Length: 154
Image (tube, rainbow, N blue to C red; front, side):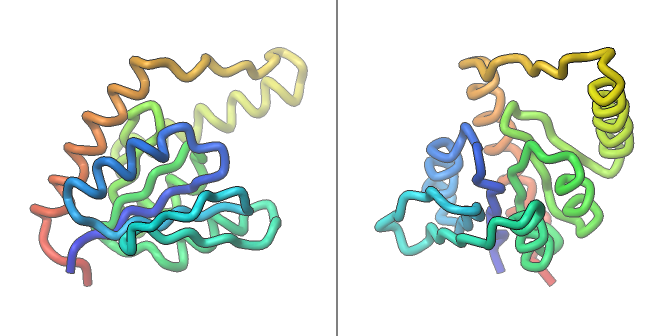
């Protein structure tokens, strides 16, 4: 069975890029959000609207994603949860999250949150750039090929 692409779609800046890659590889893609998703005519593109709870979209993705699926998210805790499932996880700037890198990503997120809470940092993130978009496209293509070549889902 082919991998499925799951997208944490709330405020995701690379939805069009995900659709483009998914169409090229003929993969099912599921956009999960609290609302505001545009319907698609493509039967392989599905939108799931969840309740407005804090982690409702994350929880839905974790409940449905399986080993060898692809997950797109900027949310580090969700990335950690789906890496633990054996999914291929990619941030919208093209940063892959793996078993080897997720621990440091979680630690850095926690440190930055602590610095924001203590007022030592304002917590500003760099703007999303065309370079990020390009890097994302290249990495998504690589990760999808890896998932397709890794064999079937359980």
